Length: 298
Image (tube, rainbow, N blue to C red):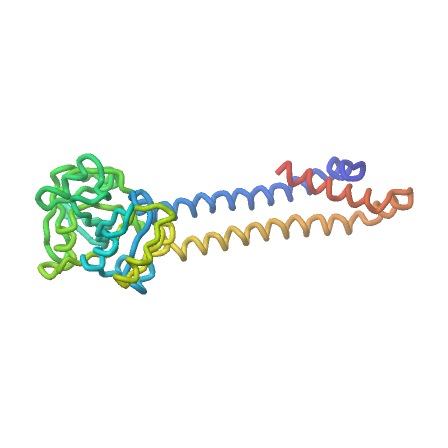
């Protein structure tokens, strides 16, 4: 390590520069990791918070609620499975106007009043009483209060705000809870015919949903697999992963290029060491040790 330590001492500026570059690349990778985690959380936190283990969609829907339409006939086979709780679930996006004229976007989850999905506390009032809505606490931070009225744009349906709960977001839009009947009225009007988006299931990993899938023509999958149906989820995660991998490759190339050039520049010194009897392994350990010191220090 004699030559390596000597170089580090007398070429502090060069090594400080490469260390700074490596540190900046590492910082950028860390920031991108935080951004990626934030995007993922904003896209699926509401679905992740629901107390379910699997979801069943219409065949070919690709885990996307807007492409899936089911009825009570599809739900019945799942209710017959032993050790499984099954519930209808309606999910759709709406735009609503506040009392002050401003508009908000919300992902409305329609849930039956007897469902295991029913949120705790005041949120359950929206499922059992007159039509109303319980909003994610994100909306409370925006100044909406209990008792305010939201008018759903396009159908002019008015829904009073009954309360707030932590429900996260879905597709980067805060979630709101309402009864399945109210949700059906918002989406289908008087022509609901018992339709909903998906079937929420609660079982264990050993549970087989195959008999119900065959009987109803649906496709059941884990909650984690259903994350891919969130708008933009797959594209965002793949893009961020690609950028992070590129940063790792770039940082490796920067370090490799620096030490390649540095080794060429000190070829005469290495030749002198070998002439004095230094072995090839000694010279290699010297170079790798120098590289390790720079990487650890950054």
